[in-house]
Amino acid sequence: MKEDQAETITDLKNDSFGVLSVMDQENTTYAVEKINEDLDGEISSTGYQNIAELSDALYQGEVRAIVLNESYRSMIEETHEKFSDETKVLKTYKRVSKAKDFSKNVDVTEHAFNIYVSGNDRYGSINTGSRSDVNIIMTINPVTKKVLMTSIPRDYYVRIPCYENEYDKLTHAGNGGVQCSVEAVEQKLGIDINYYVRVNFTSLIEIVDVLDGVDVEVANSFSADGYQFNAGTQHMDGKMALAFARDRYHQEGGDRGRGENQMRVMTAIINKALSYSIITNYTGIMNVVGGSFETNMSDSEITSLVRMQLNDMSGWTIESQSVDGTGASLYSYQNGTNSYMMVPAEESVAAAVAKIEAVMKEQ
Image 1 (tube, rainbow, N blue to C red):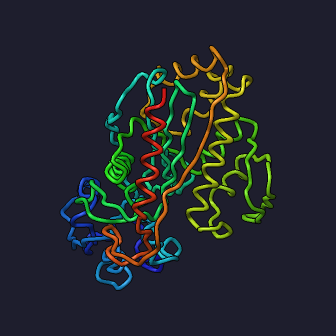
Image 2 (image 1 turned 90 degrees about the horizontal axis):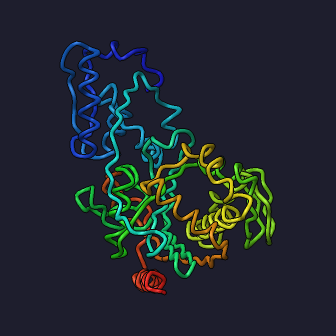
Image 3 (image 1 turned 180 degrees about the vertical axis):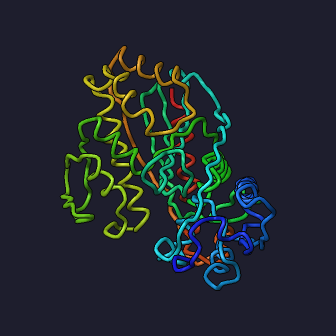
């Protein structure tokens, strides 16, 4: 806790640490080994099954310190809103792991494919794990020049394969890495996802700004984060586009409405990126924003799509849809407590999948 007298990790040499005993074992084991090296001995630790038990143990004084994967910080703040203000970090260990290539490659100029777009709730480096607050499937048919975006609410109650296939909200799958989210979406929708693109707050700002802003269709007027959004087409820079995409308190349907605005921003980005002045400067733009996002689509696959577009500069049809559900308080595997969930409306899922499959089959 912030008021604790400890200033360095060595001040905790004779104290007990709280650790996760079931979840996130690879990272936890790595961190404990590093602590043991720093303290030149074996630490005493108490295991807890989930995030709620771990954080409560710190607040209730059962342990003096906890070992926490930073990707779970935002989850603790769901129950302890002032966690970041009430605690302090004594030591940070960074573990770098090479991402596995789980792409399902196709000839992207000849065959339709699905891209999972994951947007996490952080600024800064894209390499840091976090919840996936944006979950959009982009179905791209290069033959018919059609893009279908399907938004899935962050709180959708689904099974998470990498967490013992237990039920939780979809956003929490992001804490286990983008492959965890992809597998959860594939299982729920019964479709193959060929590639992924992972972005965060900083990514969106930088991508929109390098395009010199985008023209976004605003459905309803509202104010958020110091910006006034007026119904109709509005030009936005990166920070304004982020504020527009993040707002859910002024949107009909809350998170579902936010998802629709996120797809409006993505539509504006695609339209701007396909313009002649932008696409002919593709290499220069990628040099600027290449480090802002993460994808398992190869450079050659991206380049082949750009060349295909340059050959004819034909227009694309962009459509969007969302799956729906009803709110409920249900058990969260990661939190270890009941949380707000959106129970899928299965008829909306079936309708969305049917539309995805139709776009995939068009010739």
